[in-house]
Image (cartoon, rainbow, N blue to C red; front, side, top):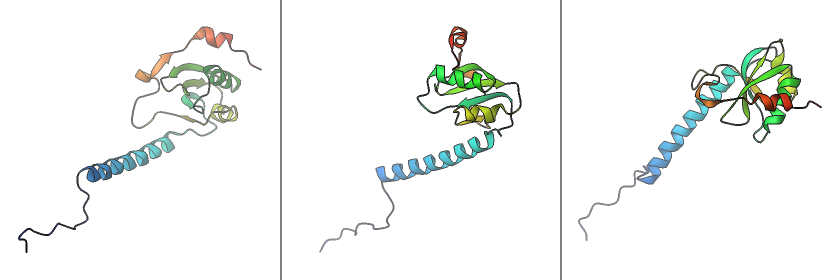
Length: 135
C-alpha cells in the first residue's frame, strides 16, 4: 500500500483549462456589453445629422459614397474599418434612406470607445467623391 494521497477529483479546471474558461467569460461579458452599446447607439430611421454609417464588409469606397449621396447625405470621412463611414445628412429621414441604399445601420456616439472620427478616421479623398458617378 502507498501512503500517497488520492488525486483530487474536485472537477476544477487546472492550468490551460482555467485560462480558457476565464477567457471565455471575459469574451462573453465583452460581447454582451458591445451588443448593448450598439443597440443604444443605433439611430432611428427619421434621424439626420452626423453619424457612423456601417455597410456590409467588403463594400467598396465608391459604393458606400454613392449610397450616402443617393440617400441625400455626404460622406465626411472613412474609418480604419473600411466598411464604416462618418456621414452627414441634413434632411430628416437620412438614416432610413441610408438603410434603403444598403447600409446595415447608422450609429450616433457610442457610450464607450472613440468618438465619431477621432483617431480611427482618415481624411476623405474629395477627388474620389467628385468622380463618383451616380446611376
